[in-house]
Picture 1 (cartoon, rainbow, N blue to C red):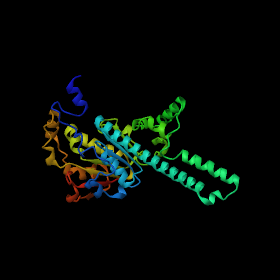
Picture 2 (cartoon, rainbow, N blue to C red):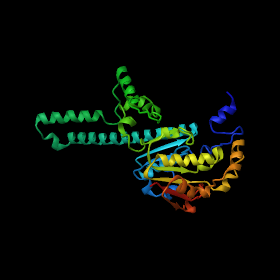
Picture 3 (tube, rainbow, N blue to C red):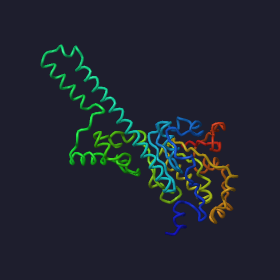
Picture 4 (cartoon, rainbow, N blue to C red):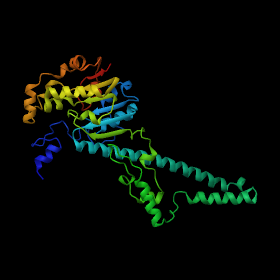
Length: 344
């Protein structure tokens, strides 16, 4: 196909530069989101996220969204980004995490079952057990035989073709959609695994809809599109980190204003808007990406240092607080201040 068309779908200019700031691997992926560390995670107030339904605008590869949900115990996190490739990457990361959670649970359950079987076998062979009535001894011997049959190391009983198919079907069943790539057992382990070890629980059965990480969703969305609000819920917290510059350069002042109106519209009363805006000097390094960004940069009147006043006086937020990060913990992330706006 046309290389330039393919590049535009990925949010790249014809020279291969990411015009929406949608560069892949900004956090040094691949990385485990459960051990991912970022200065902002230490600086953000827990009260704004704990038990809250959160929207992350410009979620990139989803690493920060997942780490946030895990660290603060959010009730749900929705991540949106204009780049479909990044959303696909976020969904794959989430699938692996769901799989790992389920397999860990299955392993723990199997270990408990093995321990119980071992205890039963030990009881059957103890001297006290043999000093029982004849009928009691027979029962214990049968129990020990059953326990031994289920112990690790014993060859699995051959399964018929119908049993094999039933296990494969059970492994494939029960996955949910709804904006998240269905997490099926076959996506992360071969069918031979449940055939040898019996059926394993799938994420949809093992984890409730509100349990981490099944309470996280990712989907592609342009938040300055006219119908963007139609696909969003109502949120306790909306987060927009290092995204406003790219909206500003590609859609001008009107794009940023539309973003702020969208945030206010989807926030519940008493909700919070967490904003990390890039400083004006950083615009000058990127404004020549395309003819559109050059033209919009030339016309910008609403500069980032005026965002707080605009959000309070024009959009309607009640007040805001400023959070400063510890530069010693900032790592590769520039230690910009984070603003938390409160809705009446």
